[in-house]
Image (cartoon, rainbow, N blue to C red; front, top):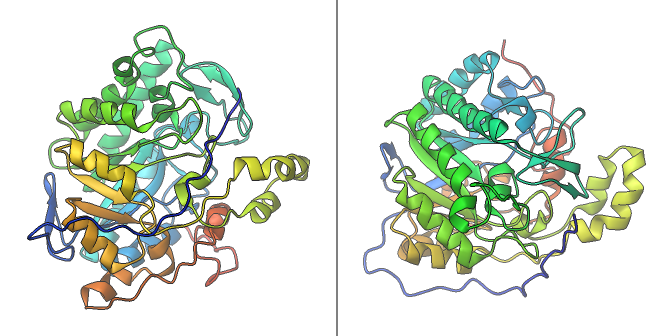
Length: 415
């Protein structure tokens, strides 16, 4: 399958819009559906790579405890695969009976620091190249990173829906406050939504509504299994950032379809993805040399030849998803979570003034877990993250800011 990636948009400075007369205080308590949060800043899902046995480790608990202690309203455990074949990378949590105890422990640890806890639940589809993994998608194809992609049968689709429900039930029983359903980044549900990867001729392909069927079935299963006390959110691509993929106009239609289901308590907006154009999501320096060093020798030459194509250059800019996200905020009554390059307190305040319900932060909190507490205390300090993106590569040795912690993490299991 040919992957043609969209060219980078020119960088633009942070652009303020007219302010609401009485914007909410981002550091005051707020509600996300059925749950109460202490403020409006969420630790975004950032894959941790701290679960070598596919269960919660003590290292992972400590990681999220630090985020909770640093002042965020809610921290998001990422990424939890609904089944072993839904994994996208090594050292991920997988929904299985042996994961239940650790999930309860991490929820308890985060709650003890006064924060809520969410989990990003997903199926990676064709993303990832694990030993023995069968890359799957809505239609047969080929990916430069995953190889041959097998088409899911209707029976397999039913199993995916069932597995999402099982995952949501386990999270509810473990004491989680929210579930984030992964509808982005070219993962399985995202691929079903995309005209690039979904060429089916049954009820799951063709029209925009048909391509939304699997995600809608998953959302219903998650809501039914999680019950009314958990908040349900979704991470949604505004654009696939590849030629022939999902673009803003159709993504807006999809968002309205999901809103009409009456299940989601908020939607978090993103773009690009792991299958074809990851740097569209991250922006800033593309760590091509560091990524090549993690690959087996037989793959390094190919990556050196194709790395500049796979990892494009997108200059970093503050709140880089904001211009696209404004269209969704204006079109939806559903609360919208702003994601993407938020490093300044003034950006958070601007987002509130423009009607965004929450902001989600990733790399900035990876380097400074207590940044929210600093802002709440009156600091106007900008995040010290320099957007080198070398943390992207650290997912294989324990996700961290490698400028502060250059050595691989020693993963400690729960005693």
